Amino acid sequence: MSLLTSAVAAVILDPAGRVLLCQQSQGHRLWGLPGGKIRNGESPLHAVVRDIREETGTETDIVDLVGIYQLTGDTCGTDLPDVLVHVFRGQLGAGDVAVNAPGRISRLSWHEPVALPQPMTATTRAAVADALAGRSGVLRDVQRDAEPEVPEAVDAAIPMQAVAAAAIVS
Image (cartoon, rainbow, N blue to C red; front, side, top):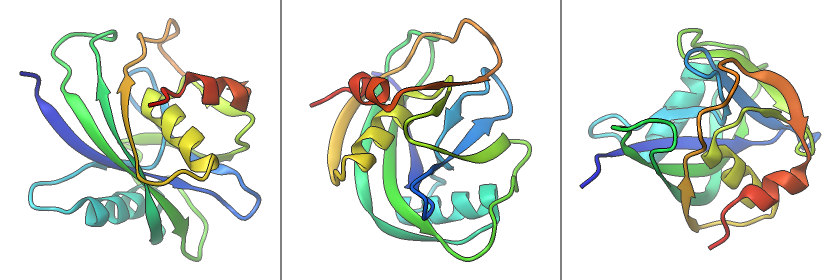
């Protein structure tokens, strides 16, 4: 039996329709959605609001649940737990976003859905595609990507069609 970790994330769009993404400050510096692990005794809803506040310095209103994504696979190393990620659709409150947790994220920025940065987490690709398609309540298995060839992120963008095609459709 594989270990299971629970996490949360949120797809947040600005009024121009750009997606808010965070770049990890360690490891392969993957781009992902704001969020993090659920603490013991914490609900997914409380966790996502707390994590977004910790990472961006702003409050978030949660609109609905995009879906629950189970991240599995050992293509980037053994002994990694499966991760059950609750992905919400959210709206930021007033104020500008700023990196508020430099130990966890190195950059926080808005991206056009047709030009998302790479490398990106597999869960982020699937959840952004689902959110932009207007889906809610999705249940999806997502396979981990192989480790990126380049250990640090680059700002190369990929077309949204590639993001949608990469999302595992159930």
